[in-house]
Amino acid sequence: MKEEMQAHWQREQAAWKARQQAELAKLRGAQRHLYLNVGAYLAISVIEFYLAVIGHSQTLRADAFNNLSGIISSVLLLIGIYIARDIHDDDLMGQPLPEDYSHSGQRLQLTRFHYETVFTMITGIVMIAIAASVIYGGIKSLMHPGDQEIPQPITLLGAGVATVIMLGVWWLNRRAGRKLKNAALTAAAQDSLSDAVTSLGTMIAIGGALAFQLTWLDGVASLLVGIFILTAGIKIFRESSLNLADYFDPQVEDQFRQAAAGFPSVKYVADLKAHYNGNVVTVDLVIAVDPHMEVKDSYRLGEEIEAAMRREFGVVDTNVMAVPAE
Image (cartoon, rainbow, N blue to C red; front, side, top):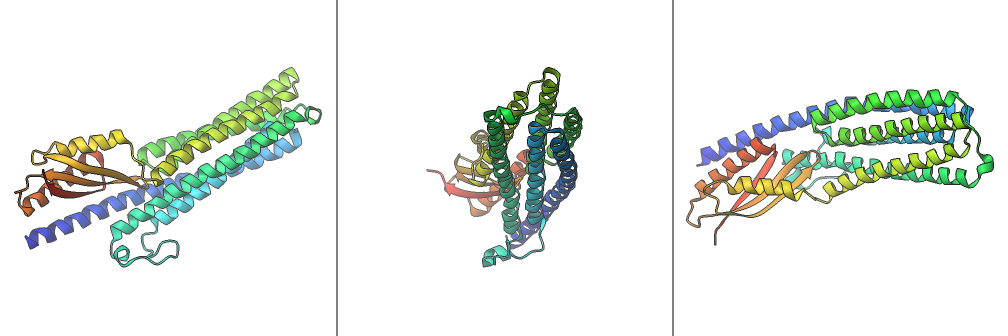
């Protein structure tokens, strides 16, 4: 039995290291895309802000600030990914670790994966703050109609260029996010899609103001841009905060429960709780078995369940505890 346990431990370590390297490879891919985001957002923000100043467009200025939030968001996500990838560090953000953490590479790495979610949530907060600033500017502009003026035609070009670039960035982020199953890229894709839509709305608003000589349309469009940013920021904040609060979709947990209950030796599933660790999922499972089942048999049953959860659902680690059925 001792040899069997040793062999099992070695298999577990090998499986974990393989999964860890796969997740780290995904994070490296996400990093490359986020660097592209920073470059695109920086170029667009500078161009739009300059054209907004010389072209007297409140909406284009709001869109420039919106794209500035994209730079901040991408940098925050890069920081979160950097911490998650730092497998050679023996502490967390400079804080010493308990003894059991420092001797458990898997537990430590799962903890690091949470930082990606933390910085994703901060991204949502930044977007909400910038949205509040843009909405305030739009309302202030509408309350002082005498200060408003028709934007210059050059601002239409800036909004059009921004729309095309942001649609390209959104498509790349969306494709990579689905391929890598990465929360940071998914958040970046949502952010870049909202930026593309706001840039498109900016272009339409400027075009309308130029075509019909409507001074108030620029302020209204600025207000709508702020509301759109606010909605996207709240969505990102909500999803990431739920993950950090250890919320897990009950329907998915029910699928896990049915898979475990499908083993003939399992009388019923006494308890199950799934957890997000960044993008990876772990499960704590309590199963009820025959009270007379031998320890080695319950151990093998737990191994079979863990293998099935990894194979069917991609669960990185399943902790199975067997209790006697009543």
